[in-house]
Image (cartoon, rainbow, N blue to C red; front, top):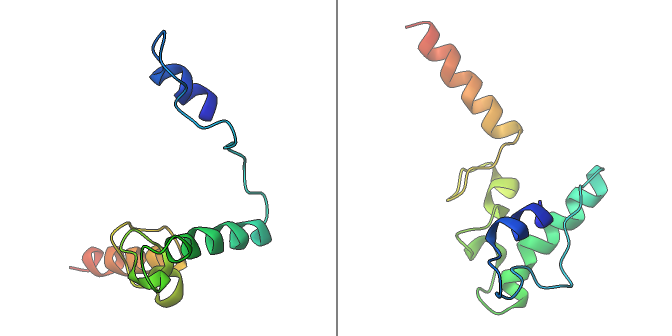
Length: 93
């Protein structure tokens, strides 16, 4: 993804789009998923943007902690179950 995006966005003579130290990779197991989610949820706090992870409106923290849908919808067991319930309710009408 990084390489393809860089090639699409970079015009001749322009600087690179991505900083060199950043790279993309696939998350292959639940432990790595948890590690990356913790990093993303804690980063706005670490950077001093908010005092608690749940205060960052663009975070999925509230969803993973409570199941509530936030600013950005996350596909999870909760959203899948909610969608199934909505579909089964509308199918019976």
